[in-house]
Image (cartoon, rainbow, N blue to C red):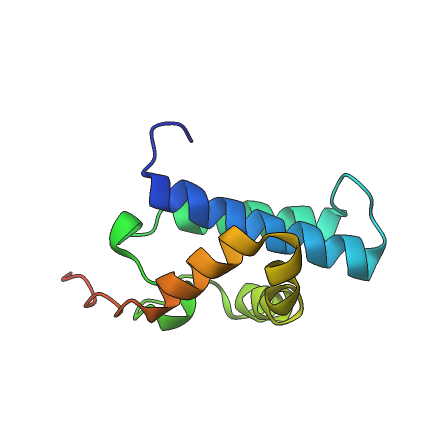
Length: 112
């Protein structure tokens, strides 16, 4: 992770914070994630690592490429819907930076 662009490291931290917040509140976990949330976070990290836009990306919701499988996309949406508003209180800097990233125009789809 150290060799990745700071924008991508921050995106990964934001997703991890949201999943931890969701899992703690919904599944009653303390420090570690439950198996389902851990698998979801691993999947999201893998998708971020293979993102063709990397530091030029907007938020995944605005991306012209949908690299998440439909089931995983629905799960991430549920996490974001729950954790998003709560991020302002628990992780205000990550939340504000994520909102700013959402204002970016989505890059054009890469050529094949």
